[in-house]
Amino acid sequence: MNQGKPIQKDILKDVSGYALPGEVLYLIGSSGSGKTSLLNVICDRIIPNRNVKLQKNVIINDRKELDSRSFSKLGAYVMQDDIIFDFFTPKEALRFACRLKLKVDKATQDQLILKLLDELGLNNVQNTRIGGRRKKLLSGGEMKRVAIGIALITDPLLLILDEPTSGIDSFRAMKIVKLLKRQAEKGKTVIATIHQPSTEAFRLFDRILLMTDGLVIYEGVPPHSLKYFKSIGFPCPKYSNPSDYYMSNILTVDYPKTEKFERKLQFLLDNYQTYIVPLVLEAEGSVILNDVDRDIMTQVTSIREQFRQLIGREILGQIRNPQHLRVKVARQIIVGLLILAVFFGLDGNNAQDIKGLSGCLFFIAVNQTMMYLFSSLIVFQEERPLFLREYSEKMYRLIPYFLTKVIVDIPLGILQAIIFSIVVYFGIGVIVNAWLFFRFLFVVLLIGFTGNVGGYFISSLFRQTETAVLFVPVFLMPLILLGGFFANIGKTQRWIVWMQYLSPIRFGSEALLQNEFSSRTDIPPAANPLNIFNYNLGYWLSMVLLVCLAIVLMICGMIFLKFFISRPQ
Image 1 (cartoon, rainbow, N blue to C red):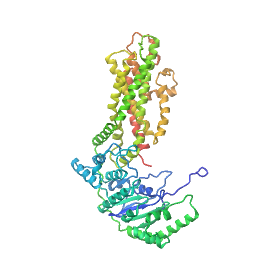
Image 2 (cartoon, helix red, strand yellow; image 1 turned 90 degrees about the horizontal axis):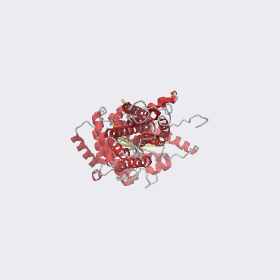
Image 3 (cartoon, one colour; image 1 turned 135 degrees about the vertical axis):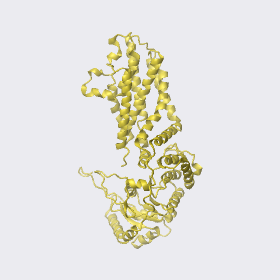
Image 4 (tube, rainbow, N blue to C red; image 1 turned 120 degrees about the horizontal axis):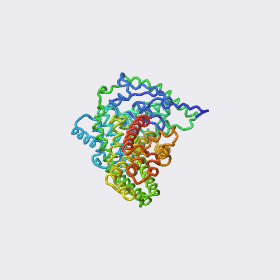
């Protein structure tokens, strides 16, 4: 900031170049040189706004502009981070992508998967789980090849990769370089960024584009780069790695920038404009991308198939992470036993017991709402990078993705509700009756379902996990206060009383109290908690309103997920 005004920074400055089918073009530069930004421009992944100004012209075959729509038909983009679910195996990851990307029958898809596994050198680990940050089961190079395999499923004409050799040793990096070269030899146009390749890898490069400080200072074949830089006063020492020399003597930017650096940069740019640009302009006219009108991407698969694959993935994740199931079940048992320890022995026949039982039922509504809400609170933050990749590749629509989360949670929610109800119901002094028990169970289940959806709703509002967690008390406080137990709804100020209809605690606690006290004729009307708390909706209307609230939260969650998470920055 400078005197309250933002400082303008040019990330890319008059960048131009070309890429040929049958070759791999490597963008080489130090961190912050603009390599990844250039890839995002080519793929049309940068959305201009009041803070980001962008002027670009990406042309295919000198006639067709490349935008996000045409790129999705022609190309595939492999991000620097390997974003794949840790419980998948390489074979399952490729199969999931195949099912959602290709029109062909499953037998053909399975043959393609086996072919890709062989081509990627993943046969020996095809059934090994990928693993996560805590426990990696595949090497970095193997994970990168899985990510490349997912991109290759549609046989793209244009393959773009951001730092495909980042974080892996030189031996595995060479495997990636050779893999990309084989893909280019099939007629693909391959563009990749790379930081500091080894000498052996550098010799395999078809063409390079050197960048520094958002500028291009060289484009051409690697052998010519040695002659060119030697001619302008930057000779690479014999037996040295050219890329290391370029990085340390030409491409690295020292901050703050000195006058000496600015003079060197201008010198490099002047020579580039004089000697290299004419060669680039002459070659650009001959760039022909094979079969540019071919549509490699299918239309989005049917909603039914999207649900089928997404539900299958969620169920597989739960099966392979049984610890989550054990924790959720144990949590319900522990909380249930704690409630029993506090409220055990109430008989509901005197004012004190009636007050205690009312407090117990209200606490159950609060507790179930909070437990389920926190269970789903950070789901979208954790999955956002993966969701962005798959959503941008049009593998599925937003609605199936969101609803799948909700649907798959239902069976586990039923199990938790049954366990909690069995632990609690028979020891807190309620009327022991089979019909009333099942109504109690139904309320607990629906409170948990609505709380779970509420967690997804809050998760859709925020990009950062910390922000979502900090917002929860602000979200829950009015819902608890207007639940009817702490404040008499009939005497609450009009300007805030409407918020009770946004509270699952309000409807859930009333349903629980209606289930217990609506048929009690032995309690005087003045002492009946339903009259004290102004609970006059009735059991079934409270349940219907809980369902309606869950539906509203789902719709709002999908809307906010669309606008706050699904758009890349």
